[in-house]
Length: 132
Image (cartoon, rainbow, N blue to C red; front, top):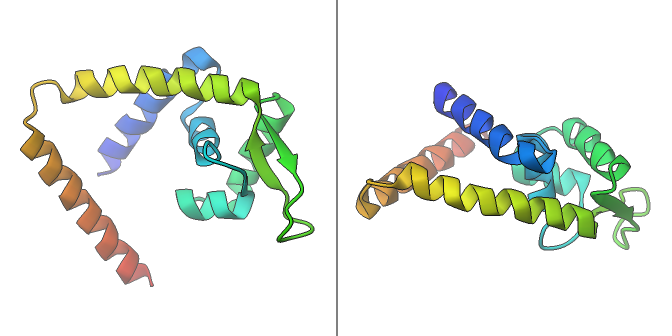
């Protein structure tokens, strides 16, 4: 599993590199694709620490790919939102990812992919249950 995670991170970095991003930055951009989120909410969704997501979010803001907006639910916890440049970068990465996924899955039966997805989802469910 660690080898697979490493290979996926490496592939993510390769996919994101042409857009000037990394796999980690891609994940944070994608987390706010459908609307603004707090850094804490992004961290929970990605199962990362708030501090690591905060560093990435700050860099995305510095680079003009995201911005902080007021959070009506919390005075101090701002919301992270994509800028048009951030949305353009995310779309470029996502387009590359679709082509990559098709190449990776080529020749695998849909039933095999479905079984692998179900098995991984069950493992995740069990691990989360054990952590609780």
